[in-house]
Image 1 (cartoon, rainbow, N blue to C red):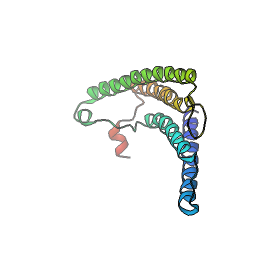
Image 2: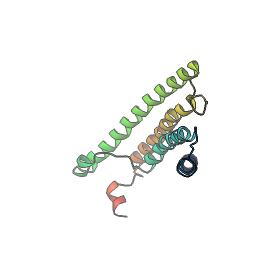
Image 3: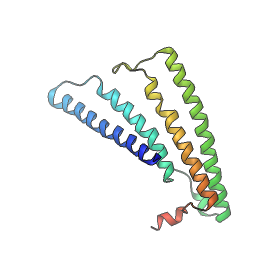
Image 4: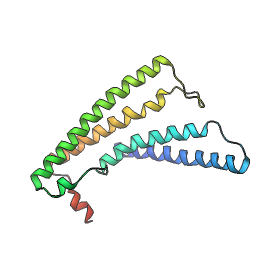
Length: 160
């Protein structure tokens, strides 16, 4: 269910962003005038797509990482490194969620709005704690899979 929600949000954001940027290019180069709001909305949709997409990448273990140490170590060391990476990511996500929520409350108090769209800017910033909270859930799922032996080895994935 969580995967479907993440995919839906990312798909809608990317799809609408492509249409809006396409309209902007059409208007600017063929009609000679540009839409005032399109670049800002495209940027905001991209931000939402990226932060929700971080959780999708965590689900399938597709985030960038240095694997040299893990590749040359034994099974136990690889397990320890995977657990360390997940816990470190979980701690980082927790800090970002707390910081992001405090930033949203700050922006609510100040009443800052996006210049072109004139919407409260905190709607854009909500993507950060939401994406990191979803990523935290994925970290917990990955830790559970590691400790129950359900995690597929990275070397097994590359051979598929």
